[in-house]
Image (cartoon, rainbow, N blue to C red; front, side):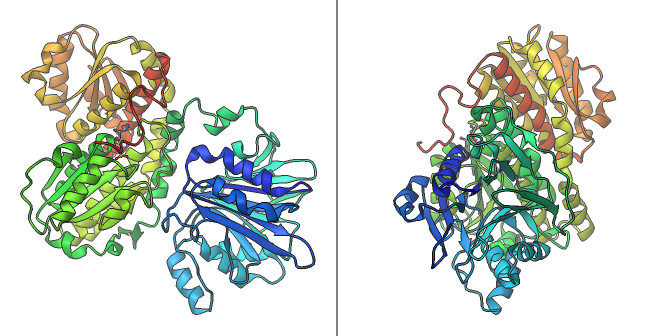
Length: 608
Ligand code: M6R
């Protein structure tokens, strides 16, 4: 995720900005940059930006000593590959305005086209650069007014900070849907995307809310809404230490990332629709989408589990045969290819060796590959024919959580788009399902509110040696992900089974006290699943039902219930997995394990 750090005061700005950005390094980034105001007879803005680590900037910052105003940025690419040119800050044509930005400007393509027609020169591929040219366009001796006018025409999410060479006494900032804080000092002030960046200087901060705007000078901070009406804000006293602050006050990255899921879902949804329907026409794959006779979805681990849901969704909505396979198996299979096949690879990191090898094999066979990944510029993103990005932000915990839910979301979006292209759903159906996806973030929030109850469950079962995760259809796919999460972080044996398959062998393992986590979200399968659960209960298992609230009565024989909102069964995996993530997390915490870095595991598996 991108990081912002800005300073205005009486001290040398560069070391303060550099150190602030360094404090944000743990969040991951691919390029960095700093812009400062250089006073003097020929006052100007100084700018250095480089692809790679922050340290790449050091040799170029010497000239900037004595500057007391500046903004800096660490970038996690979303639009345009990681490169010097795409790094922030971005400047206008005259080089007098510099802007750093986190988030996504959804209507940037249209704005960019218009600004080019008006004579502006763009030097990067980023969405951010439209902000600098818009501010330039609207600038008439007031940076504040120009930024306000810019905000009136952009759509999307942003935390932005802007400076202008002609107004070296201020930083103008604005926030919508991306975090931004202002740190308060004595005769100096700070702006940052996250508290850890400024914690060494101050513990007094304003945490901006959406639609808030501020003019920050060395001696004061004036906060208004975008229109200019004053906002009354309380100063927040940060009591966390630095390590806690990096985790946003959470004890572990895994828990923080579990809680980031509503925002990750919103970010992934942004800009995916035109006229209320999903639009992936920009991929240029419509012809293949229309005629393909088979889709191979290939991935590893959690991404593979997202692919299992993808298969069910695509088959159901678009009526295309889909095969989902584990990449390490797929790459050595003797696949019967057809020229119109389509391969979809899913990978959070975009670097997984087996997934990459499967992709390369498909391309050797002349098969088109569509990648779904979270990392712009990753090997898989570069080698695939086309890419759909999840916008989960960097995932630091080894156990994947927000990457998974955003992968699920992309699978649904793709299934909807394929259904439209193939004509298997009508307009009303397409719009109806898309609108259900639009509020799924709020349903995830509702499930997150059940955290305390799930924690109690973990307290009760943290001592067990073995667990089972059962479900049918979509629920089976989610059960697989729940079991993986539990073994990965708590080291407890967890076995996922299709509920109807149990009596063909594994039932022999069920004994008194074994917890069975049962996913029950598929209305048409509830009776079938319940009869399987009676079989395990009869053998002494303790059944924990994760069930939709409308199915509560049907599940009342279960020993415990975690209720999910009454969601369309097709979309239930996105909410159904949340209690399982929280359960796995607290099971690991109760067992005093290293939750974020489980033994023997790496975040990115770049070897076979
Ligand atoms: O980066 P990828 O999505 O390609 O990684 C695939 C798996 O290694 C990954 O999902 C792994 O299973 C996770 N640690 C599970 O939480």
